[in-house]
Length: 294
Image (spheres, rainbow, N blue to C red):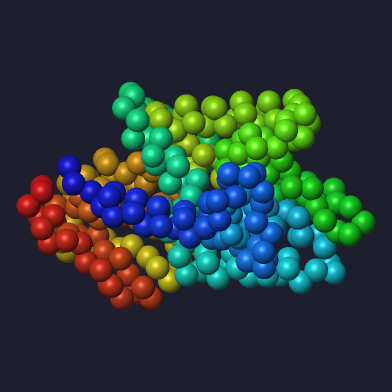
């Protein structure tokens, strides 16, 4: 079965390097602190990653959301609002480095599993709980005199920060290794669990944990970029739903909050019935050659 995966992975690779241009910093274990760190990347990418050229929107949001003296809190919210309004969870499917990491892990040849439907539906709400509690409630409730909130999600949960920043910085900095404790052990356990699950279950972190995906999901149904099903061309073969790794009911709700807009459904549709739209106008029709792949 041919899909759009090679082209999408190329876009993901380019996006990862654009988000992390300072690769040489891995060799000396330093963090880039230039002016670009005043801006956010669209995807989940740790501020403390040695190669990172921008801030993580979730980390930035936690740090400043309770600071009335700081205009940056409005910037972060505005950035997420504009990005979500234009792209929705397209960011998750094409621009997020940690999403790309999970995609690569899923290519490892082990037995793949799908979470039972009822359990899957229940677990989908977990990312919204994490967003509400760890990204908003706790940082707002617990902050210092300058209005800087404790980044609870980054500090206690985020596996992206562990693999992108924690491990590389510990390898290169002996002083940091001396400070290792139970918190790092906890974060390593979460990372190992995420890695193992990602080889068997498609993007478990994105589906059930990621607060950034939760934010973008609110915009999926009305973002400028959309996907649509041409009902006249659709033959109800259900291939789109059978092969959807995010388990979206494509025919009922193709712009579901759970859709990361990877485009897999579009590339396998035998009648070219699934298209990209911008502002309601079709901009990219399915490959007509897909008709021959039915």
